[in-house]
Structures are given as structure tokens and as C-alpha cells.
Image 1 (cartoon, helix red, strand yellow):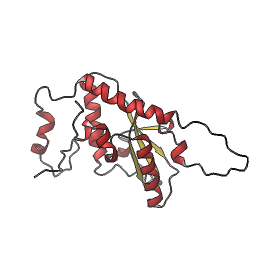
Image 2: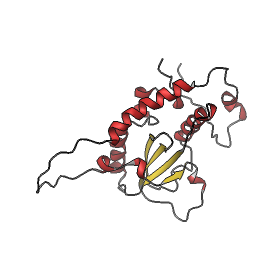
Image 3: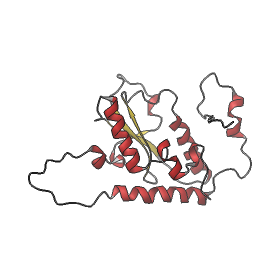
Image 4: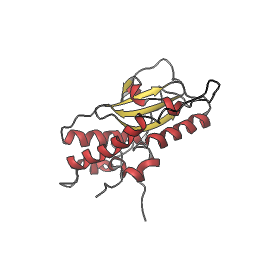
Amino acid sequence: MVSDYQPSLLPDADLRAADLSWAYNRPAGSAMSIDELRGWKQRVAQYQATVSSGPPATQGTLFDLAEVSPADTLDPFALPPCNAEFWRGQFQESGVPALYFVVDHAAELLLYVGETVKSNQRWKGVHDCKRYILSYVEAHRAHELPVAVNIGFWPYAERDRRDRQALEQTLIQRWRSPFNKENWTQWNTPFVGGKLDS
């Protein structure tokens, strides 16, 4: 029987220490090599660079009133970055409907796209992406490579959940963010429990 269980580095209070033994007792040589890490990042960066450059400009007409989607113009790398631990802060309000983007600014990689109705509370609970970020940062630290993972919020998302999720899905497909499960097959994301390409 195949198990979908993925151990967490950010356990709930009721988890026992034994449940985390895998994190501290890795077999020698099981860490991602520096070449594997650089190769994986390069593949993602090469694809995302084509998205950043955007579609070629087309000639419009004076009366063309075509609506431009935020998915076509939103630049996750230009959003003001928040520390990945922002959710630990004290907020006077719960926040606004938003899209959020987990970005490694040291490598200019968009790692994850998400949506929330309360931007200041989204990550207070359990969130698998927290584990992926820790694993990603740990892989960089092991090889003394630069890493700067932050979260940027786009606070103009629709209040309607379906509309917000539709935009989120469009952005996930457009950027192919590797921490989103929709793209795991493409990237064989080693930080979410998948295996590396050989």
C-alpha cells in the first residue's frame, strides 16, 4: 500500500519527536548534490524567463477594448517582499483577499502561487509549502549557496473565491511554479517528496 504521508519539519504540538527522526538521521549521501540543485534551478529559471519576457507585442486598434487579465501583467518579482515568517507578526486586522507568491529573490525563481481571503492569516496554520521552503533553504545552506525566499502579496484579488482561484490557476499554469502540485510532474520537485531526474 502506497502512503501519501509526508513528514513535517513544522510539527503540530501533538506530534512526537520520533515522527521527525527522518529529518535528523538522513543516510550519508542522501542530500541533493550541488549539481542537481543548480541543474533543477536552471531548468525552472529558463522556463520562467520566457514568461517574464512576455508575449510579443501586437498591433491593436484605436477601438480595441479587449480586457487585459492580471495574469498577463502581474509581475511576482516586483511585489514588495515579506519575510517567509511574516505570519508570526501581530496584525490589527485579518487582511484582504490576495494572491501571494513565494519567490527566491537570490535566483529570481517563482516557487509557489497561492490565494487567500485573509492575507494576514493565511500561513498561521498548517501549510505544506512551509515544509517545501525549509527543504529548499536547507539544500542551499548545505552547499553554502545564496538563497532569499520571501513572499509577495498582490492585494487586488477578487473577493469571490472562485474568481480568485481561477486567476491563481492561470498563474500556476503560466509560471509553472514548482511547489504547486499541478507542476510536480514537470519539475520532479525534490523539495516536496518527488524524485530528481537522472
